[in-house]
Amino acid sequence: MSVFAEPVTKLDPAKLEKAAEMLKALAHPTRLAIVDLLDQGRRLTVSEIHQALKIEQAVASHHLRILKDRGAVLCEREGKNRYYCLKHELMSQIISCVEKCS
Image 1 (cartoon, one colour):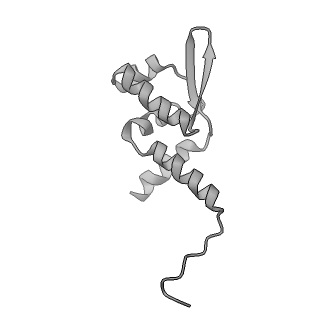
Image 2 (cartoon, rainbow, N blue to C red):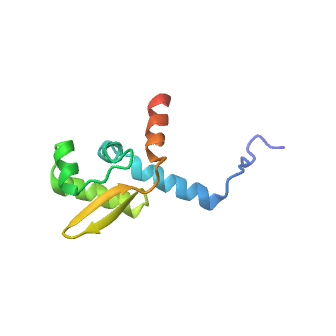
Image 3 (cartoon, rainbow, N blue to C red):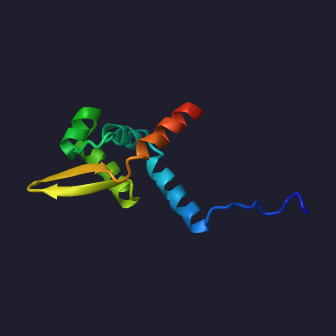
């Protein structure tokens, strides 16, 4: 067996690709802060998020769009407001794990 043989993994390549995309979505301090705000089932509007993080509303909207497009958050419309929440309750555990490993 060659030292340079391909590593064997139990995970499906498609699942690995999806996992990598999710990690890319989280790979920004502002997006990590948004996920932290939405932890424990909280639902917040863009206005609430930008005020809590003390960032421009356009910046909050940009990062929320990335998180939504990559499947990390859900957007629910109620009247004039759009509420954002985590799509997966375990999302905050990823942040906790990374904090412990760094």
